[in-house]
Image (tube, rainbow, N blue to C red; front, side):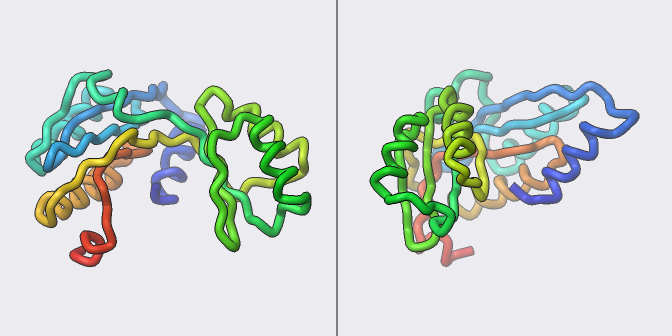
Length: 188
């Protein structure tokens, strides 16, 4: 998510004349049957739903009913940790993460990604604090259970739709189940 969206949302929420904001979610389909899950924070849900519907319509998608697509996505906690900050033996680190609720631990030369269930997010965060390991980032995401293959035309339309959603100040996060290949990315 673009940093300026986060900063705008923080400014809006912390302003002295701040209005009441609510979190709302919208679900719908894009080109090729790709599922989109849109998380928003708004002070005017009528405006927000109209904007979200307009984006879906512009790109030949359609806004669905709430709850219609939620089953396609699992809510997960994702922690990113610099590998250099882990000073204990790797096996001990893995055991500590599992004790803290980790479901999956992936690493490369520089970074470790730890995935946890939504309900274990707090306990894993606490476990990292207990071990004195600072996460580079920690966030909740919606991870698709399956991905949808699309052709080049559908991919481009869905990417434009995704970009349009992210331009909306009310939209905080957009998740989708579109399979993105290197070949498709090269077409942008």
